[in-house]
Image (cartoon, rainbow, N blue to C red; front, side):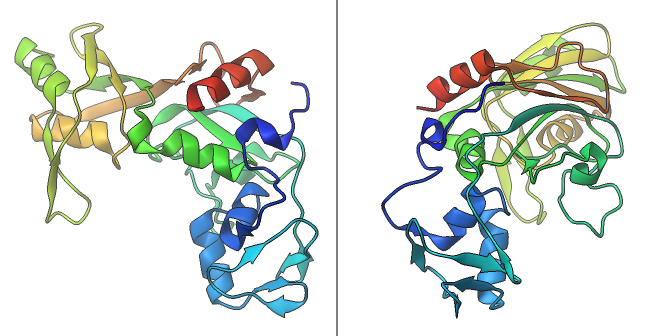
Length: 252
């Protein structure tokens, strides 16, 4: 894939001041949330001075984390990876199953969203924090497609309820939410495809559980215009320039 400049994702570099957490995210160093933790812990320096929460930086200022200077990366990296079962979508080095070590890419990247440890299929990884934010923004209704196998035969009422939204419990077990309407198509007696436009934690598994089903396998095959196709488990590829341009158009 040809090198693509920062302006393709609108904020890889700017003359205007940007928040420090955004700078670190866009530089591919860490997420904004992790950046805030580092800033709060006093581990980030701007021009040799301990940074403050909410601080902004401009082009040309020196930013360092734990003594390491952080610079923006002009080359936009976007990988498509076929995540095998057992790999966790975390960058935490103390987790032996972390996705970054499994891929072993020579430059710093991190996953766009997540797939459960026991789910498989397509996940994107990038060095561009703003690209992550735009893809994951729930209000944009970006499509993600999955193939799901369950432990009971699929019925018409099941498909109808899945399509029209299911009331599921959130992580804390105290609140519930009704999922958005979605597309569901049976494939065989136990298998169906589903296209979601939101990304609640373990959403498909919770939807199925609420209807008395258990997911036995779950594979993501598409994120927006990027498809898994015949990419082998455990392998990754560069997203093509055409795919990337189409993706960026849909985010604009």
